[in-house]
Image 1 (cartoon, rainbow, N blue to C red):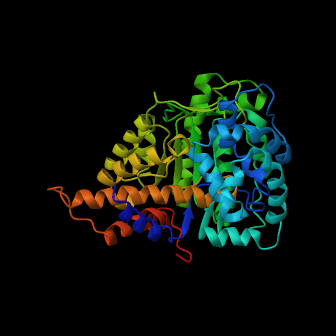
Image 2: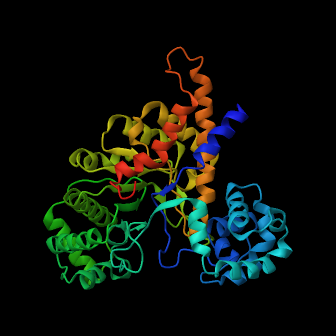
Image 3: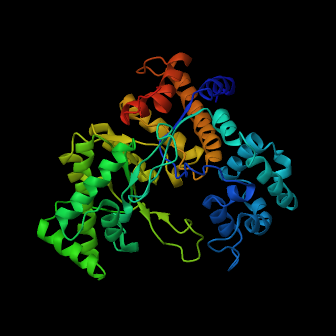
Length: 436
């Protein structure tokens, strides 16, 4: 690896503004608020739970201050991880904490107290946004959220469909949708009407796209109206759906959503392949796993019947990464999007970026998104991606000098490719042209 070339490329790429196409940030309270809030991010609780499991060491609702006390002694066990590197980077960048202090568990409680004061100061949030060069933050919003109190050009809403598809039996989803939209849901047609009203409301609020975290081996197929009518009546009665009934309802929901994506001209962001509630001793958000025995072929009907809908797509495993790349190779409406969850580390990012650049048309690649829950995490995550991208591009520059088939790639061309991945392509694919 040509270290000087990597360094030059990274320094230029790091100057690019950040377009973050998927987060879980609360736009009305985007900061973690303290060092304890930062450590409540599930990456840290799940890694520490894995490294030194103790029954009862963590429980849902634990305060950030208490979490710092409990997690401090476990942090040295995860110093090797990229997630800990994010923690060091953001603490140094935004909280002016020396990295060596964060390596000493006994200092964390006092550092946490100092962090609360700093993060509550006027101008702190604006400073984080400026230092990060943040220009877009896409959100994850439930269908019954009120999208008010924030700048929807900067924090763009995105509608998550999991609650009324995979989790339709939870939390009275159809009843809540009826209350939110004023539509009495009692069959498939009224369900579609309520969804249309939901889309209309989100469209008024400048939403960017629809998203879903889909279960392994989902298969989308047409469902007869009478079948969906019966399923909705069963949900409303409080009866538990059978597995085939739930699969059919998911199909009906996906196809209804795809029709509305067509009507309202928004992309449908698929995040494919997470197996829920696998680990019984896991912390919150730390009990799901990748399922490598999983295929995108279950979406053939969706892709084939909605050629005018864009499907930005993320996957979880290296085997799925190959499938996604080949799908984007031949399908005009599939767009590889970011590096999700278990692929969100330099080793896997480097492989997937290199693979995608070799076989997918350049304008179809969405470089990265943070998946962050707090705004402080966006910068270190993007820096990880940008440095990894610089390494990949440096290698391609060197290889192009000797490969008998390749067009030569110079630094200017490599930086142009990075700009497309990080800014130009997301702007074009999501139709986000304000101030671009």
